[in-house]
Length: 150
Image (cartoon, rainbow, N blue to C red; front, side):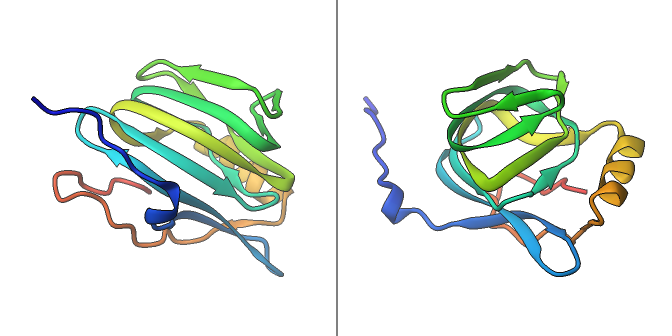
């Protein structure tokens, strides 16, 4: 009978998953995928200062827990200790990391891929911040999961 799976943070590589270009600098999101199966994904994420991600939803239930730094999620200011729960198909955001970035622990129960919403609002936010969406970095997804990032 299978037992628990153990993983140490130091043994997991960082995956750069998103980038924004601010002209004079680039901000990124990096993730360490601690356990990734068809049932769930658990990860540690680090966001650079000012990093932004569009309003979106996920194809699974999703939990986000702020460990360090701060960010906004829509109108909510999220500081360490903030827990965000998102039901499958619901949407949240946009997200903007604070001046010191943000560190998150996340769990997605099922298909972790996301879908966009409010693309007009995203384009407006990018323009307000003098930013452009950089191409998504290549990521090492499991063979059974297609990359559907836009």
